Image (cartoon, rainbow, N blue to C red; front, side):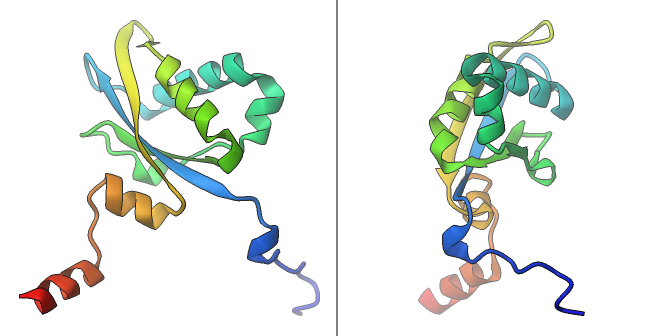
Length: 132
């Protein structure tokens, strides 16, 4: 049975990815889908269809915080600056004025959650209790 599945790529042969945490400031709360559509239009205008496909963009829908209007985007490490620029170029979504800025870039989703969204793990509590 194990022979039917293809082998997974070793980590050294996989494409490197980065996670960009961003925050949206707007006149009113916006829907996640509207933000995604605005981003795709901005990135397509910036780098074209070929560049957009090579950037390997993925919006982490589970990480969208509607209350704080924060989210996470996964992209290829060579396209981080293009993604940041595409986010910064968005000034209107629909008829609402917006500002989108990048909170930071991380190599793993776990580190991005911890640094930019304030998520804590059990290890954080263990180190705090051992320090006191």
